[in-house]
Length: 310
Image 1 (cartoon, rainbow, N blue to C red):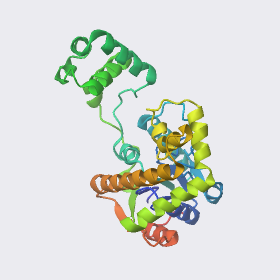
Image 2 (spheres, rainbow, N blue to C red):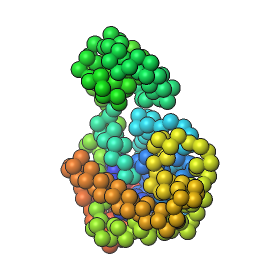
Image 3 (cartoon, helix red, strand yellow):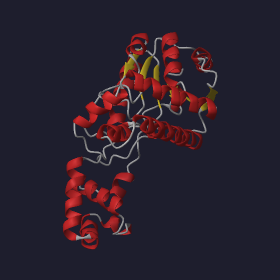
Image 4 (cartoon, one colour):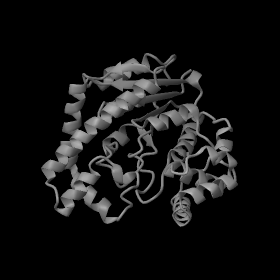
């Protein structure tokens, strides 16, 4: 019997509406798998479920952290494992939905047990590399972790990450990689579904949704976000619309130009999402949602559940 449904797809494809319809039909619980919808300060720009949506079905892991907190796939997976265990313990269907492919991959395949990157550890690694220089830094790294000899001293990102891991755990990346990852799901009890939408329809939805975000106060949300003085390189700061609205708030770009650029970038992002799901989830079912009929899409998902959880 299926106890978990994964509903993925590009932004604005209708995933959330389909998930709510499935949840209402089964008494299931919706679990967030979107890396921007985890942030509590970005309800509008991340297109987080509305109060009405949350009243229609139980939602988990939405708005769970502050934009000022470090967050990672590993931290999400830990929270998702706990949420799924709790949902399954009550005999309900877990409906995991979102557009972050790495979250779904982590669920299906698990993650290395290497420690997550943390600001303090990354800063220490950067300071050490700056003090020693790339070659001496690499030599010291190899003394700590001989397997790191394969890394190019000029590969900043990989050598910094290797340093972080070995200094935090006492074991190198290769040693961590040798430990089998533990999937969070039983493939025999999981149904994966990708929601597809024709490109012209999807682009129209993206544009309409962005206009709705503006009307709902997206610019003011961006103002409050940047007032927190977050790290502009943090994941939260890369939310679609935030960098463009920052220029508006600084007076260097018009709102119209910012909105046009944000829409264009969102369309490109949706294309990358579609490509990722085509390449990484060929074993999942595909359901076309170009007609916008969430009930029909939900019905197609429910038909694949044998028997339908109640």
